[in-house]
Image (cartoon, rainbow, N blue to C red; front, side, top):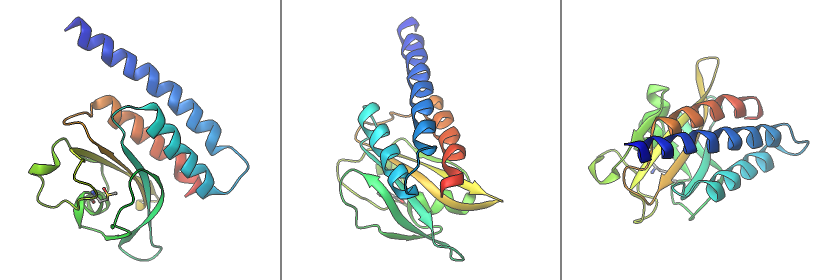
Length: 162
Ligand code: SME
């Protein structure tokens, strides 16, 4: 139990540090897509259980997500209608969708056979989902409340550059 708490505390501190670095990237003077890609690289290189990290951007005026900057294996899912897959579900409910075991999820679009778990966090502006942060993991049940908190804060941080 003590070991578990220490790991949890360690993860929290690590995410605080990553959040600060992401904030510096958001404020950089370069194209928004370049900054979003840098954030993908930061997350995938700094968190062991983040194997695919990407952004989906909502097509303006449409209920459809379009693949944006990402780091990880190429995916066939370039455009995803709201409601389809884990990404589409998160867009529909305007809330985080966390699946600790994708084999148990019927409404799931597979990107790679190695993926075991996925978390999708919407980026919301004026009550509209304008983008999403999508993370795939090759580890089973890897996500904790710390991941949810960190990624929700990150979604607020990047909203102005979407
Ligand atoms: N698995 C997602 C599709 C996106 S890929 O993971 C990059 C889904 O079910 O919506």
